[in-house]
Amino acid sequence: MPVVLGFEGSANKIGVGVVRDGEVLANPRRTYVTPPGTGFLPGDTARHHRAVILDLLQEALTEAGLTSQDIDCIAYTKGPGMGAPLASVAVVARTVAQLWNKPLLGVNHCIGHIEMGRLITGATSPTVLYVSGGNTQVIAYSEHRYRIFGETIDIAVGNCLDRFARVLKDVAERMLSTGECTPEDLCFSLQETVFAMLVEITERAMAHCGSQEALIVGGVGCNVRLQEMMETMCQERGAQLFATDERFCIDNGAMIAQAGWEMFQAGHRTPLSESGITQRYRTDEVEVTWRD
Amino acid sequence: MGGRDTREGRGLLQRSQEAREHSGSVCRTAPYLVSTSTLSVPFPTPLEAEIARGSLAPDAEPHRGAVGKELKVSGSVLAVCWRAEDSRLLRVSIVSFLEQLSLVVRTMQRFGPPVSR
Image 1: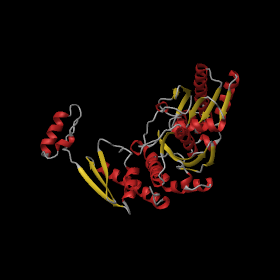
Image 2: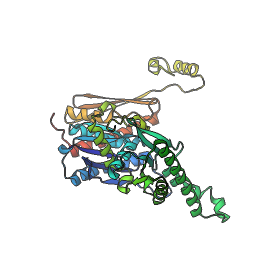
Image 3: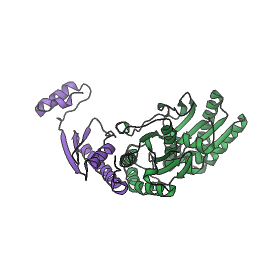
Image 4: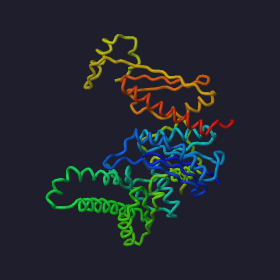
């Protein structure tokens, strides 16, 4: 019954989770929130993570009712994500792995979302829509890889929706001042259009793979309208939609622990010399040896 | 433009002339000024110095071309040696390293000492 500790901090959320045989024993998390109208920068985000990570680690162990010796493996986010925050979390993972003499596992952040989605919802082999502030990908499993069937090449959907606030303040002034439309009209139009694109691409992937299951993961997956639109598409195809709640859609430590658990069972290990973080880490770079 | 390390020992003027000749479309008119910096961090035991090195060495420098550092352990001391062509990037790298080092030390204080091997 291996127990895996997972560290996540690739963007503005920092979480430490504990998973044992498919059970989430602890999953505390903190979010670095910047003032309205501003985004989060790598240096400040890393500073935030460094300030709270050790408390979070202690919280996770206490909540799980475990000591360091009960942990069998230390998993952490190797990438993708922002450099300084990733590194701040990775050094703690490496330090405790060495202090407690436990194996280390570098986990792909996107795969963390997928494995937690599969665990929590029970979906067997879904077509995955992974949509967040930092990533937007349509993924399906095939022959030991999570293959990317579609992705945005310029900006992630979550980031796009957030940045639109700046557009509303400057560029859209002309349209808004004439009374042609309201800010609500513009936001609604953006969201409906972007979500419709996501649903369409997901549907195409499902048709291509003959899949009857769809799974939404990532922070934007919390959006009720997106879930509604996906549900409509799924119903029309006789397919089933799976989604998680905000404990697991949003970045968290337990998802890294869960992916780490699968990898650990399958024999993966990350030697210290290969444990460097990487801002670019493709979902299909990992050999998914724990699935058939 | 390769072979920077071999240019030490030759005059600044000669080096800057070579830079102009070899650079092609990239023109650097200022001579190379390589700055170095060293830091020695004492730990209670050699094992702890090794653990710190193990935690801090794997992540690559963000500006790999312009700043490089090397971490070595001798006895209970972690020795860090920087080489940089840009003093601002050197400063950024050192500050960043100190912040990470501080985190490693705090982690060791809170979750150590290392278990016996």
